[in-house]
Image (spheres, helix red, strand yellow):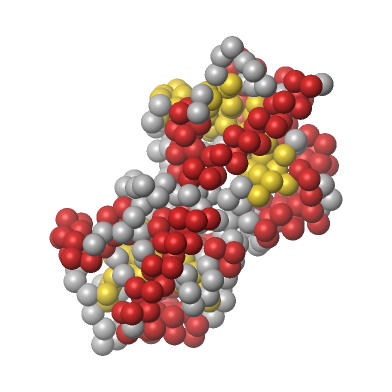
Length: 382
């Protein structure tokens, strides 16, 4: 579809930078790539305490809609004020993230403006997007709106694809476009430089195991710390938990001095490059950006068998998979990678190859641009 101006894409998401999460981080780098390809991405999100109504973040305009408590009022304000702002911005296409409030707002705006709508489903399985919808009083009504009000569903795992089809969504409207990693940024350090990274970060010597993400119940960190206590005796090892969240204080009471809590950190590269193993003990997950970034940096990954992890990791080759909640499997995986340097290096190398081939950021953005073009061309033909 030819246009005399850059095609404006409105990105509707629950929260955005500087609030840090996988979806927010992925959207930020995707927006930068879209601008390079001649698009004009603009973010609409909720305004939380201390945040500006408008600012430019990494070159992307961000509009934050007032979000007063309680939750029903916040949802109503997001819907009304968000709709007004989207109408003012005159988008060519709307892209919503998550099947809850962002999609409710996006469908309303799509019906008002008659522009295409893409919705990215962020998570499948227990506590995933469809699980949450199906466990809310308004779920059936909202699912019906999805079936009629969304032009394409962007999925990041085959699990999510299958869930949408089970709910009656036409398979042709489900587009598998997984998250991507900028492999020009996320890459390993040479082994001789790992100690330099540790010194810069103030990390101890010995075996370093890394987790990066939100400190929330679904990440399974209470389980990880429980297993870590079984693993640590007699070993010079440290567990590094990078991130913040509602469970932070609880987790600190469960942990001992071998666990380091760093809080939120924007630039994780040195942590990936200096650690020995990355662990993702999630009880539910979409497609973890941190897992992909760790693999791109050559870290062998231990991941719970949830979400897209079994699609990304070939067990024993490009990572190790364990069943969520199975403490013996997690303990065995930690022991294997602690004792066997050759296995660490082999799995880490295979992980780099896997991510470089299947999950580079450019591949993600190319597929997304192709989807946008297809939907805009269909609209132009109508």
